[in-house]
Image (cartoon, rainbow, N blue to C red):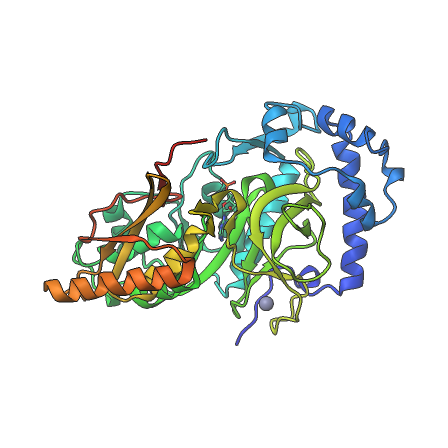
Length: 436
Ligand code: AMP
Ligand code: ZN
């Protein structure tokens, strides 16, 4: 297998040198953070007043966590550490969980971010000569411009398609011979189901790879998209508070996502006790930016749940890998007292070839009990239309979901394309239970 690097020196750096680099950058980050009104006050409370108060990476444990609410409270300029004249761009989170947060970038920040994206694209084996169709929203959302700059820097031909308008997406793919796409998993699944509708046959497309992220999805969904489109799917992780995409990405071995540790200092904590793990336990990812100048963030609690793979990757990169994100701790549903992640239901659905490309989970209160309804589209190709095969599928899905999440759901099978489609982050859960 051909292994390509964007910046080999940094990507295969030995762990000791990496720790040294991290300490140097961590100290600089604290120095920048002390220039913000927010951190000046926060750090004074733990007796950190200058860069001299940071001597080792372990000193990070003295620093309080930063949360999404802190960012909202500091809105609009409380977390800005440079003069406004030095800021060249801002981005916000997509606001899936409340008011968005804002992150500012200097020219240097944009350059570093762009470099990280180029590194990710290169790690997937994409080359000059590839045609890259960026099907995520351009604008405040980071996936559009973030990937656009990185892909241009890497030297591929970029089609800034943005999201939506499936007919046009497919036409662009066919006319320009798109080889690589970037999208949300939900939207690419939708596109995959639409080839026939727009009279496109797979051999007319040159597609070979897709980068999918921005929302949790299961290994089964990856496989389903890979099979439907005959492509290779790479998992891409990021969040607007850490620039956006370009935080962690899969290499050609696709065995977890390399977390770019020269740019982000990662901790995994127990979300309840907030203790940092020193083993590979599953917990909440916490990041400290290491190169950002306009909005440095210290110990930012992502709410994303994952775990670290510390074993060596055959690609030679020394940066640790993280497992597929299980979901956000605030996405976790409690159904009749049982903790359930929507991704567990998705995993069951996507394992069944008769299931289509879209689904929705609805939760209602029936007396004292919670009632879960899983609405799923069926696959037009495999569906023969006879009632007994529909019944069999319904029972099979019901049993598989019950075995996985220990909750007995109602299953509704829907015709292809009858459930609402999302072009960006999908809303998969409708919780109608009264808020307590
Ligand atoms: P935003 O800040 O709006 O870009 O949203 C970032 C959030 O999207 C992250 O904190 C994750 O919860 C989610 N996310 C991004 N990439 C992935 C991925 N590859 N797998 C699962 N969730 C993801
Ligand atoms: Zn690797």
